[in-house]
Amino acid sequence: MLTIALPKGRIADQTLDLFKQIFGSAFAFENRKLILEEAGFRFLYVKNQDVPTYVERGAADLGVSGLDVLSERDYPVSYLLDLGIGKCDIIVGMKKGQQLDPNKPQIKVATKLENIARNFFASKAMDADIVKLNGSIELAPLIGLSDCIVDIMETGTTMRENGLEPVATIMSSSAHLFANQNSFVTRKKEILDLKNRLKEVIGGA
Amino acid sequence: MINEFAIPQGSKLYFGANAKRKRFIENRCVEIFYASGFEEIATPYFSYHQTLKQQKDVIAFSDIANHRVSLRADSSQDVVRLITKRLGRSTEHQKWFYVQPVFRYPTTEIHQIGAEWTSHDNICEAASLCAKLLGEFTQESAVQLGNITVPQLIAKETGIDLAHFTDHNIEALTAADIPWLNALINVTDADELVPIMDQVSDALRSALTKLYESAKAITAERVIVTPLYHTELEYYDELFFRCLVGNRSVAMGGAYAGEEGRAMGFAIYTDELISE
Image 1 (tube, rainbow over the protein chains, first blue to last red):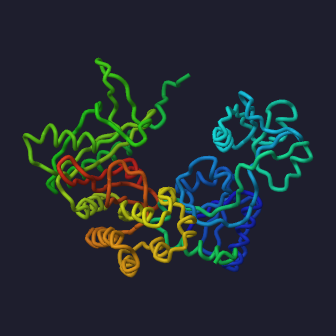
Image 2 (image 1 turned 135 degrees about the vertical axis):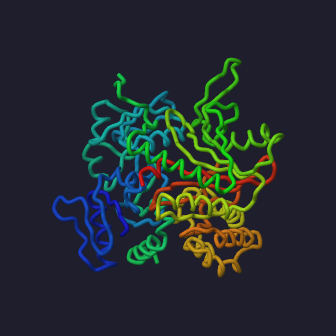
Image 3 (image 1 turned 180 degrees about the horizontal axis):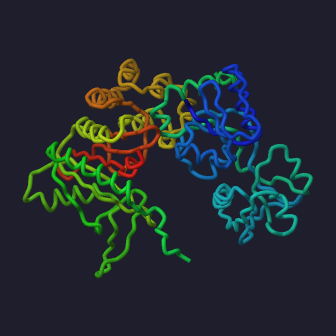
């Protein structure tokens, strides 16, 4: 039985919908249950940022996560397929009308994506003071906690409503299927078969 | 504040059933090594010659003359150096085993049971012996066999970034849309290599043939061939193997250029077997 870690929320629902299209059965977590067994698969319902850890440590054979989560740390996993769901951009946001100033000795950045932010500003030769937050990132520049934010943007509505706008796109992200590297050795046939079937339903075949 | 009962993260404590199991595993391996013609070597915990690709993982400091000295981070390096440079004058023995830990920065202990086989170029014997040892403690181990030169040649011939192999980026390899490469992605059994051999260059065919012949010669319950597997190996430069139980890696070995011709070695990660 392949074990698949899914991130709580919309990406899990959309992924389970793909499984429903392939295997026909109803794939849905009941009430508050965190484990679902259906059609020979075991799904784990975990926090978004924890999905790669479950896979890296071998608690799950496969996982689905956004590239933003996977890029935040170099997880040793096997990248299999872009599922084309959960699309978003990782952007630098500032108060409307402001721009990144490379001549500033240091820029204060509020984000939950510490490494992505640090790597981006390092690539611009800008010294960044990273302020790690876990939510409501848009608030930080409004009250002077930071000069800018690095955050995920889907529609941009939250940013606009808080008087912020994107000034740079760091990367585009979508949900990817990935595997534990050892599972990809010992259970390669099953994993590649599932990957190919998912590819067919998302129209990539 | 450090509690009285705290031990540094990554260090190991064994007692009761765990200590008994560890001792049993090590003793059984020692019996099999001796029965297979190996001699034991125990190298110093301190070394002047430890290098790793990730040098920051070596716990280093200075000796009394301010020479760089480190805790043993890798057993093979000192085992081979001491056998060839120090014992070479007094022994021609080529099969050595060790039961000792290595240490990585900041406070990680990795207990290993390993073997080094100097002036020897048949990895199948090393992989078969490793599988035999593991078979004493688990029924489910599989030998994964790869040839590090295969992905290196493919990268050179096709222009595909070698990092895609190292990163296990199957998405990127598939996107190259090369039929024989897609076929290699799917390979798990040696026989599946045969129809692909006609589609590749002479150099790649030669590397795949070596992989095929070695896989056929290994004695193990299950041999999984992974022609595209690439990883940052310390010194294995051609055929290498890993042993897996479920999705846990429990041993690794391979062939390398030794001080006096080809050599090979492997190490079993003792802690992975204790939890079996």
